[in-house]
Image 1 (cartoon, rainbow, N blue to C red):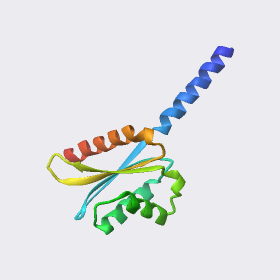
Image 2: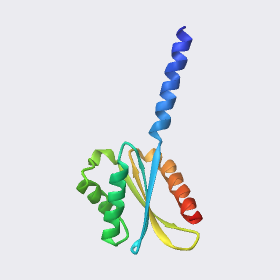
Image 3: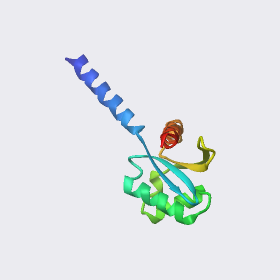
Image 4: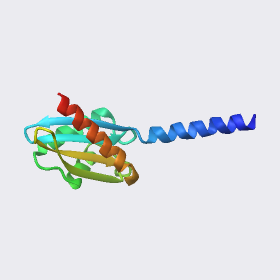
Length: 127
């Protein structure tokens, strides 16, 4: 019986660790550029992610960490939720330039966030 309880406990811990690495993706195409946003569920709601992209579009410049952090603050996202913001240049298959923005709770999640952005680019190419 003890081993069954231990196996169930290990299963719950494993499931919880998988959900911690759930990364969402949201994107926007505009005159000022293409933006792709990668973020964990715990950091933003989908409506907030759409609002971030709309604000980036209004700004019209290449996004920076400071600009993204200012937008998050304006939307009421506590700074403690986002430990790291990475902004990377991305190029689609057609040669159009865009920006990938990763909101990270833990910098160890960067590889997962980058993979999310790569999947997003593949989806955009297929459109």
